[in-house]
Amino acid sequence: MCPRLFTTRVLMCGSPIGEGRLGVSGPPYPDLAQILVDTLRSIARREHVSFLAFKDFAEQHMPFAKSLLSMGFHKVTSYPATYLDIRFHSFEEYLTSLSSATRKGLRRKFKQIDGQINVTMEVRSAPGDLLDQVYQLYLNTLEKSAVPFEFVTRKFFGQIAINMPQETKYFLWHIDGRLVAFDLCLVSGSTLEDKYLGMDYAVAYQHHLYYVTFRDILDWCIHNGIRTYSSGTLNYDPKKRLDFTFVPQHVYVKHMDGAMHSLLGLLVPILNPENFDPTLKSLTKKSMT
View 1 (cartoon, rainbow, N blue to C red):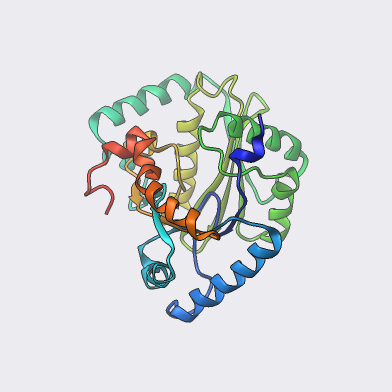
View 2: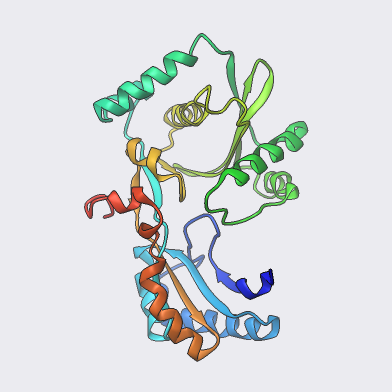
């Protein structure tokens, strides 16, 4: 009933599913923050937007963030980013770095698959004739997500390979010739960023596809000189067990209406993701630094 009463328009600077970054050289001077905020306010008034937001900025952007705070923005704890520092020469060496319980669990899963199921992986720079199947797998995973941050169109999955041909990597998994999983990643220098994963959930759990895809991508990274595997936000429980590092991030928000902005300040503690994700709540301070 009356869905408009429970929705609001937000003008956001940053990525819905990744770390916010400033595409400028040199230090983020206070003037930059003022220019961006003034521009966003102008657009917000024209488009009848209620909220301004700078999403998921980590500590390296603190000078920029301090400028936002001086302009009255609220600092809200966000979902942390995750990455794996690849210091291993093989996947087996990586396994030995994990806890005994995790290592045994993974080996048990792989034993059920390896040599038993005909799973093959290929890497492409574009989905090509598999675009429709890739998109359906993406929709499957979007539907499963507890926190669906964004909806991406079919056109995006084809266009990104045209716009960024050197960086785009499509990892595609087949079982007996049928596409059952994909992972769209971006590669730049020695970093791989995992962006969108899609699976056929009719077989995903039975064949442990999440861990199969992770193993294959990590193995590919090791053999291609990748040193950082960035896996974004959410799905924290397996990432914790797989020894990913958690990087704190924050959202900086401001309501265009002064009274509503003051009310928002009272809600900030409630919006902490730890209140909604038991894995984040269980992390120690050491894990978050």
